[in-house]
Length: 522
Image (cartoon, rainbow, N blue to C red; front, side, top):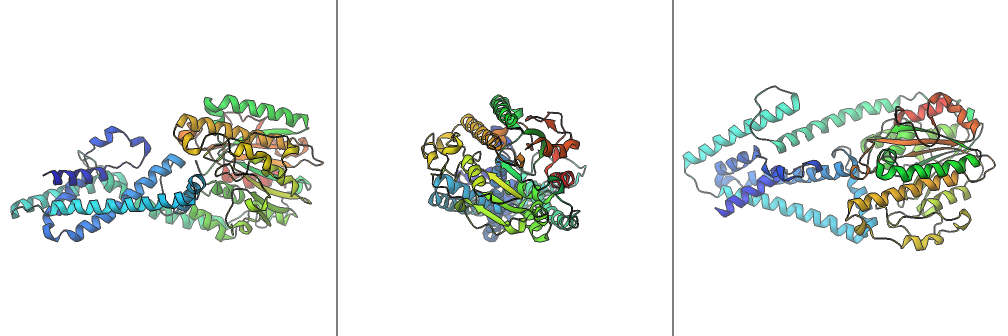
């Protein structure tokens, strides 16, 4: 009897496993899964012939457990569920991030352990079903178990149909969460494939494919697009970050004004949250909503002109400065970059800041050193405000940057990632300080004296993870920085004058920026 109860309890826990952090409550344990009588009844009916049934059910339930865990991770990090069609690349990205925090060996061991635990769970589910199948029952009792299983299977179908199709039938007195979850995943997978086909057609239709007049209004002025990692609206809307951040912006704006530069600010709605920065970069470059990896691949294959392709046709040299890239990035030329300066190309001789290969101040300093002759359009992806947000760098005088060794004392100071991430409040504090280091560094760099100041587009790629942001949705700030004659090109945008976007200012989709920018500077 104890074995039967233990087997039933295991199946119950698997079936009621939540897929959202908000459902991780004690109340979830009281859920009655309609699928449980189906599984147990099926095992009882089949008896000695249940081995195949048990193996198939165990494999299916193990896969569903893995998908629910993936959902938990995706909701925690990105504020959305996991899409098997578009998000498989996130597994590799997550392992790379983990390797940056605990080392390659640690990440490999963690991955192997996860697979072993999943396999053990599958074996335990199979054994649980076979335990019930071995229960010797008389024929009438076995038929009764089959009838009960059929009734509950019908209830599962009814609830799943209600959820998927809005059928107004009888709402059963329990919950077929796992059956419904599986059906929704299958439906959403099919929808993802259809949406991808429609997106491919959209990517092929580019209003700038035959427009030779791009960027003429800039009169050869350099343009630099700077992505600040995890810079979202929470920096303004969350009181935990707002006071410090506003002080950083005010101090930076005073330096810009002294240098004869102005700043205007607005809001964009990022296609992602909590990670996948490259999708936001691709959205800005292509003028399309790139919210997942399949769209990313589709737009690369489409041959669509990017902002950087269009700049190259207008006579600009194009380059990407990407200190986070430590492996080959063959997509670079497809985005229109004639030159890609990855971490190994930037000459940094200092120590890394955990996952962060080099501090933002060094990245910006070397961007000036390697500028060469213009006109030049550059994309810079800053990373000091990337998790794990420890240690937090501090700005040095610009003439002390050198080869980066001046940052070594900072790189080895402060708590470890495991110490910071043991306390959510400490994570938020380190995030806020890292972000203001990055934003303050950008404003300080923008104010440096130059013969012909560039036009800077400074924006966040996405909000941090939802438990860190706690406010602001998917919106990110965007700042235009430059001399008055350059900013005058954007008078029609209605953006706020100064570093703080008006809270009532409507956000644009990030995908709208490319075409509106090109229209303004043609």
